[in-house]
Image (cartoon, rainbow, N blue to C red; front, side, top):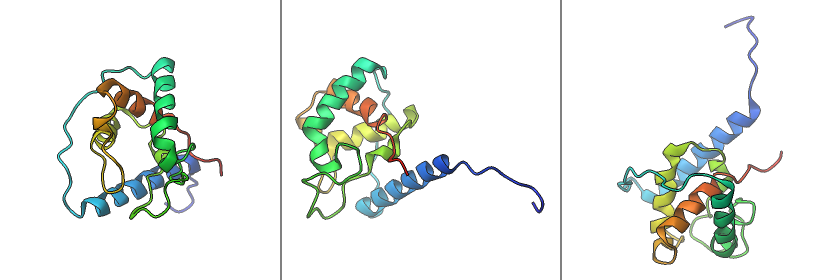
Length: 139
């Protein structure tokens, strides 16, 4: 309304825009064929121990494409048909995102390999927990 001043939460808006961008990328990858992502709950509590295990796995398996900062600009990312996801977009996502992240880590998509054949179920949940700790870049 006219005459009313509203405080804009810039960080929140940027985070939501990043998630919208990631959802748009996912839609284009699926081309209208959205997978049936099972409604599963993360059995591994988010903790310093889980995050440390997840970070170790991330550096070993994910950073080559997604980059150490989750920006999607890792050294092996060039030449893919789609850019690797900006994983920092999931920073502080609530538990409802866990099943989605777990599904993608497990099954992969386009240029992303299915890590379910390499990593145990618990390792994949540790990765989910860690990915949600990757902070957006400072502006």
